[in-house]
Length: 329
Image (cartoon, rainbow, N blue to C red; front, side, top):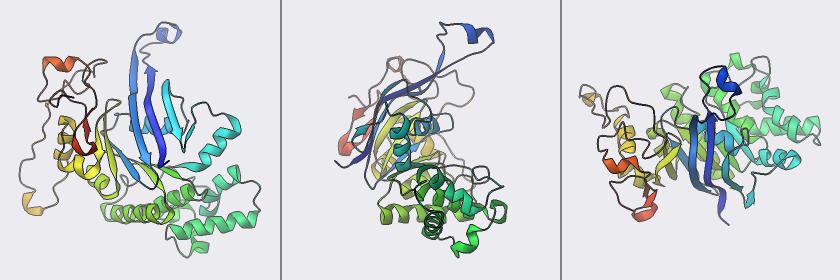
């Protein structure tokens, strides 16, 4: 078996409560479909990118995988085992193998704790049988893995004494200290200066190759996705609308939403900065996303009457899949 993670038709709906009365109504039929039938597979040693705008359901999906929130239906298979029913020690052991890198290095680290204590915290929870000295050695080794050196000096510092890039390296070190198999990286470079982003991405890529890690990499920025990813799923309004090998999807985008995301990437060439950027999407106000049919219908330039029905995620060549009636299944 070469798969580290398989999601099959995972769903999570949150009830909408617009008033206090709604809290006491048993038959509240209004829901936000945060994750609506997501299926994906991450192979061992590979990086799967989930890309989309804020509010598309990416972070909710990561929290479901961690079992931080419970899914409504579907299955999650990790390294061959269905973990949806895990409880107690089973769930605790699972979480040693799946760790998360958070988006904001300024708020995800406790300012009252030394770096040593921050990185050691997972060991204190999951590896209580290790001696204090063994845990310290693990922490120092993890700091060296992320190139925070001299590790003994960095370990004694507090977060306010570090730069944004150094703080995110501490977050990465904390995620590595338990030697997990899968890392969930939630927009890990979006809060960093542009000059630092490339360094962190290069570090993550090297760690993946050297430690044989697998990544679920969450982002709204397709330029960083291309650098680190092997496969990609484009997520919109809780659904995967396009998926496949990252080069194939980004060089030949099929779904109108993927095309719009690529249109929105900043232009790196100075001579092109004055050119008007055209984003292929309906401008102005859009209605609430529909619960049936194509979720992108009100923003799509190519919408048709048939789009009021649910499009299936159909296969194109080279394992490239798209959910759009422009491309018949």
